[in-house]
Image (cartoon, rainbow, N blue to C red; front, side, top):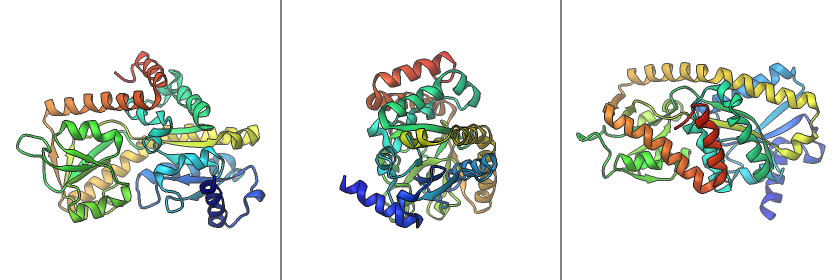
Length: 328
């Protein structure tokens, strides 16, 4: 309780507005990434842009970053109402029924996710377990994730003996390739590579340029794997206090962002890859057989993690996704 009280005071200072005076349409959003985490941050930027465009300024979102609350600690203060909204990835709160982490193993077809009931199930799950409502669940691009390295894949097409940074989602793939996973916040990847703490890192396919990882890593594994999905949630009590029209603005902006973001992310990635090519960064490629193993392991390991964190909920979500042909 003391922790949440302190966070409330920090949020007030960060925004320069007393919390008691906050109006229903003025929302404080806690984000796991800042502008230096591009293009991950681009999804949030697009969502806020769409809220402004659809709402005509009726709903305003003020951003509070990871310097106030670290990414792995952000769910609780939003669930408790210290902050109104959250932009994050489910793996950052996997220990708190973070079922959204497994959406990375579900095809990123926006319309099918909704018509199949997948989107609605994730929404209901967070409402029940975390007092939060989902308003957007968007892929950052069609390319998902990759691993970047200081040295290329071995002659055996693996990473045996190496240490690779990765959150829980990546551990199955990292171990499949013979490496040991190391859990570090994204902001520590650069220094960990520079100091030799890790030999590479798993991350969304774009971002090496904005985070300057190209200065300490020279190779990118291809093909990419999985889909990278980020959520925007709002505290359920705050949601219920909004007018129907304000609720519609947030939901419409979420759907619009989901429909737009893959193309936006693919453009960002294509430009980044071309820029990195000019910088002399190289690709190191998985064999066809190894890539098939990576894809299968990515999906199965994510569902294993989801089963551990969410039990029957993971099974029900998988059944919905499988019925729609969105996962295996």
